[in-house]
Length: 403
Ligand SMILES: Cc1ncc(COP(=O)(O)O)c(C=O)c1O
Image 1 (cartoon, rainbow, N blue to C red):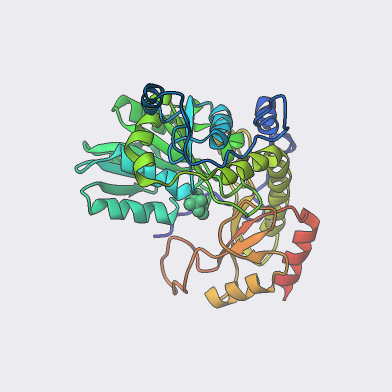
Image 2 (image 1 turned 135 degrees about the vertical axis):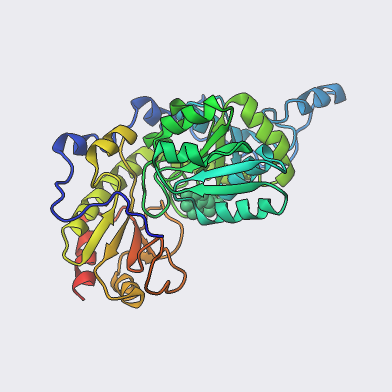
């Protein structure tokens, strides 16, 4: 079923000058947290502690450490000093008490769902959710954990989708592909009133643009593979929340699934964090300029960028701005013509994932969905804007659209 999302249509007004200035209004304290990762006297970058295990003076000291393995380096499947540097920075950025980093974003999602659910429990997914997360939920169904989806951003509809067995409400906002925004504070409040845990995949916003824990969410999850790593050369994930909840996920999911982050990957993510504010500010600004160019182009039917369209809603739900991802539906006859348009682009790489320094173009469809109703239009493309520069990318889009 196709649900109309927030989108820009020609002549819909656009964003005011004051909002434009505030589009990437990071907290200055966050910029310093990113820049000063691992700051200490000695080497300016944290060392890569390439050790799988750690030696103790006595066996009783080792046994005591094992009781706090979520925070003490005993064995690197649990805790490693280089990974800890990254966990501390991410917990600070998300305003959480604790974080654990995983080998990929799916590692964090898997550890969380595995640790927090058991047979008989129900998970409610709200918003446009990353596909493999839903595949994992379907797999958990074979172990007695049920799930359902609510595609509405209406708080009454979300409330109506909660059932007595609901133990976790899991959200994505901005949502995958159409970047719809959810009423996060309202969702957190309704969950809290019923003793239901809340988690959000905060990858698209990054901790710089949205801090769900400050809105009442229990957990923020990330694929660090995207903007935090930022250079398309490493994978990573994170789960951040209260010390008690993160320890529970560590004990009942993280340690058992074995998807720990490797120290060298943590080091790459720490290096990525140092330039995250600068990259994200530039990429977001360019993405908005390109989205506005497309919105005014006669071959674009609509543009899915949360800053375009419902301006007061965007200001209320994402006051710090949106990142450098958006999508557009084109006025083209079919899926094949849409793929041909993408292929004419010379500067947008045809590759999956996003968040790196290179611009990418992707389709939400693995094959032609055919005419008729579908959640995403057949002529839709998603763009991840890199660092090539807005003017250069607009020129590339122009030649491809005119071709
Ligand atoms: C929104 C979102 N969450 C999670 C993931 C999974 O992250 P990873 O590929 O690092 O496992 C992705 C990957 O594309 C994603 O787009």
